[in-house]
Image (cartoon, rainbow, N blue to C red):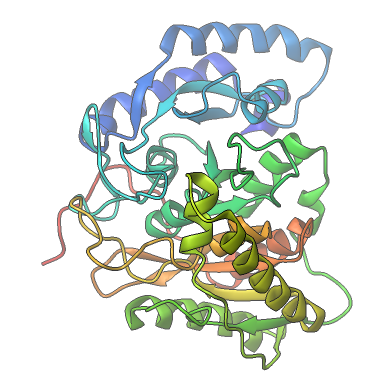
Length: 382
């Protein structure tokens, strides 16, 4: 899209009108947006046409959903706008605790585009649903316990949490990191390049130096994981190994459940015990990354649950360890659970090695094309 806009073959104002029309058609039942900004988007499109007279922009004319919890004044949104993105609205965020992956917005529950009776995850619920439904190609997210990766997994899109501290955190504990929701690795890489000033798009193709070393862990040593998600996630990882892109390294990873440490850092609690737990897990992960380039896991312990909540299983069980450790992590589409909802594969790399996430995700997308957009929430499977 940006290439066409930069070449003058597609007008930003036409892109905005088409985007607003898609949202107007689909969002009454999807509820991915808390609100849209039609006049602001039209004005931005007209201004962009004048700006492009001075030269191209990497994301020229790309419609952007902005997570309502951060708004247009956040650092990542400002950098994306500077790269040419046009914010079209605030995406929905569930009410509730910071780790809650379900719940109602002021308009009702945001629907999962794959099954209307299931949650898209959270807290970047609307961002993931809007991207999965094809309403916008990119949306912002931030991830304090899995809030980018979980909705990416359950909506069948890619979501990336940056290395913690690579950009300023929006929470005092430093657990939160920004990142994109996108339908393609190329789009996610372009987003991150605009955000960081990097050249991650250069890692979309084959890499030299042989296969990457990878460790598989279905549970991280503490989570209870449903075979309906572990199976597709492992199958996706095996596709990479079978293609010669990964080489498995045997390693028994046993992390302590991060829940007590995470909660103590976000609210009054035993900070000394939290520091000990965190240090122990950090040491375990340091040993793993001495042996391997990547850690692969299911993104979530179970498939997308209903709008009333997950029951006893914590949806963040496999993600929030890496908010505590700070490692960059991505969720990429791995397949589907028997109920027809998407399953995610989580890819974790060393600090500041986001390029390995991009390279591995691009290889998987090439081997097994990801789901197309789902513009309307589908009814429950029969």
